[in-house]
Image 1: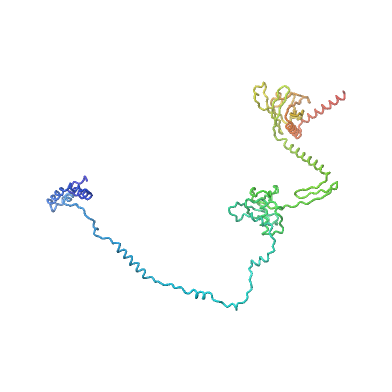
Image 2: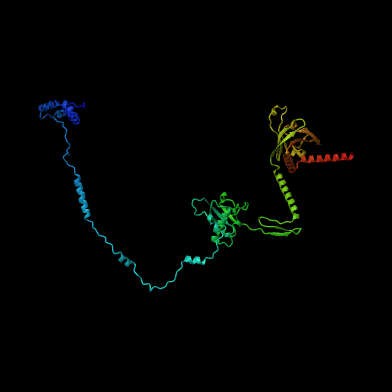
Length: 467
């Protein structure tokens, strides 16, 4: 607004802008006398201004009044005319329709036309026809019932929302050329091994018949390789266990053959019968004692053999080492096929003792013997005899722990021993284990020790005879 310097244009603009929007009428009353100066200016202005005049001077001769819209005189179309046009369009559409009146016929006459009576006097008697299914059922009415039909409920094929497992079953009772093709069987996961065997026999009977099949209890499922080879190193699956317990998918169905019965006469003419998998025996009263005694000997032989096999294995025992000078010391005796180790057990207050016990280790070749000395009700004494060169000691410091009982068997060899106490079972295990190791080793030390003892016995007998 500040750029316009035509005061008459500004007055006209203010009047037309504010008077039209002023509801109170105050603007019109204030600017009433201003229109007189504008009219007087227009009368004194030149009718034909010179062309050199500026645009601002030309604006002085114009009247800036408000004008109405040019389309104010056009009248809009009324709703009545539009409605009349729609009625006219609907009238033209209905004029093209044709109305037909539906008339129903007489129902009695219609039924007579549909249900016409036929002459049945000329019809000939026809033979009754039977279907193929009825003839098949009549022909095979005496077929025996499948004995494995009760296992059909364990078939997992077609089951919904029930856990199932799939297996490849190799049938060993089939001919050689048919064994390489396993039977695909799907059973429910809750079935047992016996139920799976019955299901396999049921499916087998559909293809090969039931003539050569036996009871499911006479068959077993064995672990097989992928090529169908039965692994005989493992026993058959337990028939009473759930099949889901085993994670094998390739199994072989093997028939259990009955063992042949063998009958013979013993010395007292009492029959001895050995049968089947159960091995039932019928023997005389005289041979019962011999059989029990033989069984005890066999068990003892097996136990001795197991001890000999376990003898070289390392094993530790607890015992108490006894000395004539030093107090008793609790030790751990470790025995293996190579060494015998004696380790003192740490105890409270052991640092205050005037002497310090050290660990001792002897090779098995230096051990001469191990034997029990004293058997009491509560404690059992035993000793371990070892050899050492004259003036030499074992590894460690055995002079602190051992009792120096010495017997000269050779100019350069001396035998010493350690004395221990423990309960009877522990002492027996230690003595047996060391002696078994010595028998297996057969060292020169042991032979020399045995020879020296025999020599002593001979000398003792000679002295007794002289006396």
